[in-house]
Every structure is written in C-alpha cells, then in structure tokens.
Length: 196
Image 1 (spheres, one colour):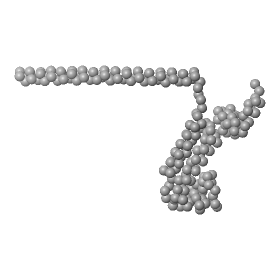
Image 2 (tube, helix red, strand yellow):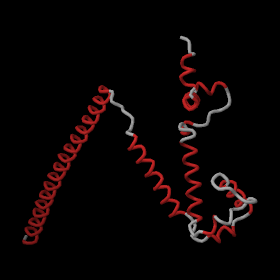
Image 3 (cartoon, helix red, strand yellow):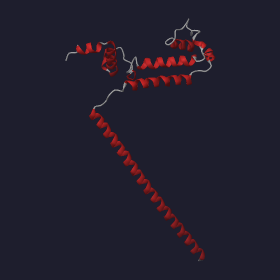
Image 4 (cartoon, one colour):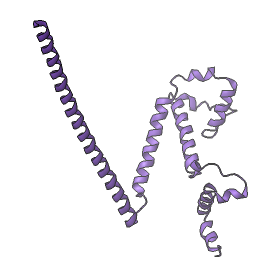
C-alpha cells in the first residue's frame, strides 16, 4: 500500500509537472504568435509606406536625370574600382606568360592589340620594363571592354540587333537606331520627316 501511494504521488507529480510545462509551452506559443503578428503588421505598414511613396513620386512626375557631378563621380568610382580589381587580379610573375600555349598567346595578343600597338605581334619592349605592366594591361583590357560594351552600345543588355529588317521593330533595334541617329545629328531631321 505504501508503494502504491508513493507511485500514485509520483504519477500526480509527473502529471502536475507535465501540465506546468504544457502551460509554459502554450504561453511561449502565444508570445511567438503575438511577435509574428506584430512583425506582419510592421511589414504591411512598410509595404503601404513604400507603395504610397511610389504613387506620390509618379503623381509628382519628378523623374529628373542625375546631376552631372553625380555622374562624373560615379564614372570616377568605376575607374577606381576597375583599377583596384586589375591590381588585385593581375599576375605578379610575368614569367607565367612564357608557359602559355601558342593559341592562348595569339588570342591574348589579339585582345591586347585593342589597347596597345604591338611590334611584330609582340608587346613593345618599353611596355614590359615596368613592374606594373601586367596590371596596366589588364586594366586597359577591362576598361576597353566595359566602355566599348556600354558606351558604344548602351542597350547591349537587350541583345544583338540582327541584320534582318524586322529587327528594327524589336526594342533593341528601335533604341539602337534612336541612339545612332542622336549621335550623328540625324534625330531631328528624321523626326521632322515623319508624316502622320
């Protein structure tokens, strides 16, 4: 009988402990649900705020272009970033170029011909006398690629304009035509000749 009473007290104690833990868990679940609701309200308020700001911006129609000094600053930062990347990424030991295969060497010289005048298909002796020549050439190649991709064809991200006449009706064809007309001064003349 004493064992049964002791066992019954242990069971009651375990049940009481389980109920207390259950209450703690339920309270924690309730707290987490309240936190979640508060976060959802904050998120919804932020979305509403952004949406209203966008609507106000569209209503005010103040989509002004960037200030020239900001553009010049951005271009200067781009130049510094390209220089830093070239410095960090260029080879430190120029003798590595001696181990390059003939096809790779020819391809490299072909690319370098865009940024340096080659002598008999090789780099001029004056270029390789400085210790920084790998970094300088890599920076020149990167600069050439970036500026020729973006400034020569600012709509490069739309894809290449094909030679077919139907390509002028695709966005990249129309935008490239407008850009080239503007560069050549024909934009005003072409616009004036359009009949409605």
